[in-house]
Image (cartoon, rainbow, N blue to C red; front, top):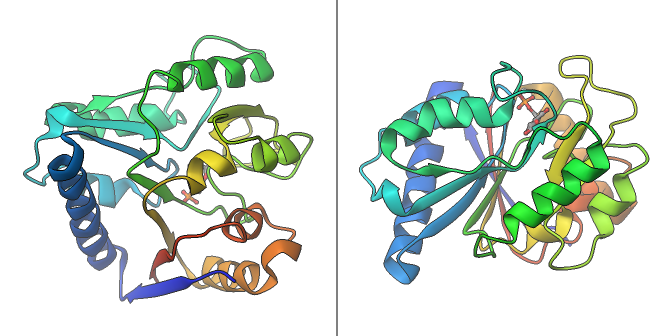
Length: 233
Ligand SMILES: O=C1O[C@H](COP(=O)(O)O)[C@@H](O)[C@H](O)[C@H]1O
């Protein structure tokens, strides 16, 4: 049974303020408890105003490592690169922004390389912050030949390479993504979405649970922790 708590806002600005406050608190608690924080943040467009607010928080950013939940296999200079937007927002704070892609075009090898890079970090994540695509993907867990590996890789396998099928028109690239086990081992899991369409999709995915056809439903179905879902119209 998925335990989800919804937080509704009138607009994206109000949501950005509230979510940045919550994430700031999560980071501060991790710094107090362990002296460092490791968080994964989504790419795409929805999180951009939240990055901006969060980057204004007064935190000991030098002890914070930020990784993308997933990335597109494009050069770091490409505006579709998730880590590029994360770096633009957070490098000025002094945080460590950790790319999970490299210059490897074979997506399976790129996934292995991301997994090897992530072995240098201290999991579990303090936060897995997820977005949801209008097709129901989350991170870069998509329908296609790699769905099973992304969902069912064993504990300790943090990342895999994926080829979405169909390719999403807004960013038609092979990807690397955190696995479901890496996401769900996080101390906190938080979702941000906007718009009525994604709200309805997420409600249906939660209701369907294990039998959901959508990656977000399949990920959440295995969650043992309560999930906070922040939604703005
Ligand atoms: O391609 C991606 O899409 C999802 C959703 O992005 P959004 O702009 O529709 O919120 C995102 O969470 C993921 O990280 C990204 O690679």
